[in-house]
Image (cartoon, rainbow, N blue to C red; front, side):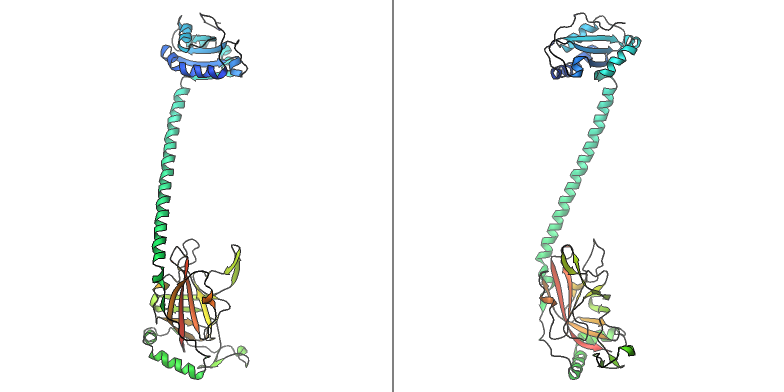
Length: 378
């Protein structure tokens, strides 16, 4: 068995381990041009990292084809590394001595192996392609995000610049005194003279539910019943709201106060109009406050007040209770900041206040619609 075919004999090396590896990397292309290299394996002290300047540099070289007498000289000349001790084998010779040489390969450092290098280059190319696809994808996502954010900010700027168009119309009427029988009759007369209300009543028969007498157990001297047709009628929360002009016909639910996101706030109505507990009920006088979503794309809580910005002065709003219905007419509309709580205050006359968030998808302000009671419908 031949373990070395060196014709020049080893010389002492003044290279460290890093310099040896750099020398192999720079000379590999020349060596492959001179010999059809199949395998290069560095072994010995330089592989273990405990080499010094007196150690030789052991290199196992396997090349393709028949044995060549100049193979060892070619390795020396191509690599030019002082102290190099190449052990050079043709592929046929390597096959005969493979049992012993495989142990060297197993303990050594493979610097080059035909096939593996090709596969490595192919893998590198595939990896580069994947990286390019990933990079292009990330770039496209970035561009889309920039475009989306730009469009959102442009929409925000435009919507906020048009914020006054949502409201700022109408004037509040003077507060009324408590409603008595004479005042109720005057309201009914005024309602008959209101073209908008009269038109609504004429075109929407049956909207106002026929009153039903309350259970006998609830009737007593301590209950503020009003003796208006079909027996005594009491104060009940509204359970339905109708706004014909903007095609709203929704149930009404009661909203309480909850602790959420570190602060107290009103509950959100889900696919309904919400009545804020503690504010007035129809027929009671004072301020009856209700809220609803303009849109709710994330939470999916409905958009019952999506068209509320379209409401106009004198438009009719109907509130149904279990025993009768009440008609209101719009007298004002304005936009305020969320911190404006004066819209929740009680009033001297009977007022209906509707609230929703504007502009759509921005929700930085609140649209406030104010309506005054004009009639109780039987």
